[in-house]
Image (tube, rainbow, N blue to C red):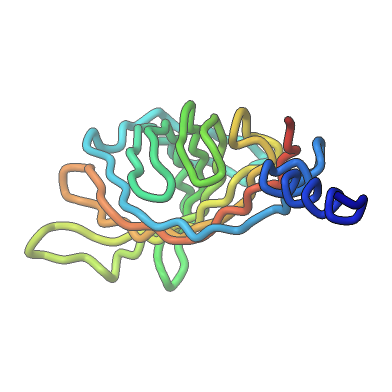
Length: 185
């Protein structure tokens, strides 16, 4: 066999084995994935007191609880909501933080913190069910991810029904950007 056919056979064999596909230590490209799912809080909000400071611009009531997410982002998280007397024409605005000790996403599994901003829309009050709607924007806090969530960024919007007994249920949709990972052989 001449040198040229042997080289072709060698290159084909290496390609089939994947040796030529991605060099060791090369990084995958970051990828953005859509996430949708449901969320619920079957335990309800629990008052945690008030927090006041000049630097925070006054006082706000604090509430804590746990939330379950299913779908593209799945896991149980603890949350803190800070509700201030920030009344606007579209409703009462609030901020909060969410901590997932273990969350499963298309990017991987790990811990991550979320910052949220929401508006409690009193105009959506349903007298038949004694419920109202909140809309929240969730943002992955930069640098907070560990494990498979390290370097992940993203945002999603949640539409949540606030029930008369304090429980909630809702849906979310948005996207996560998974960082490129180093490939190792």
